[in-house]
Length: 116
Image: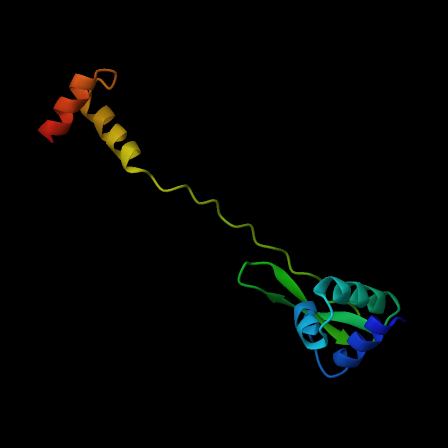
């Protein structure tokens, strides 16, 4: 067990933490904290006790000291695809098609705009 793992384990014994919180508490980079947590998990000194859903919809592992089974990661719910907003030009083009305006003729388009 290296120094980072010992330090992370020491803090984990005070409660349950995310890797980002552990990084903030210990001053160790989040990448190094994650590596330390992976090492602690492999030797049975730490486990994932829960998952927290963030504002982006991603799940973040919450870690605890001691042996235990990792809590399974929840399935991500697929986000619905939003259509891009319709632009003013698209709305005008739809209205002109509905009115039967010959859009290939600039004169017809101008007359339609004046008439509306």
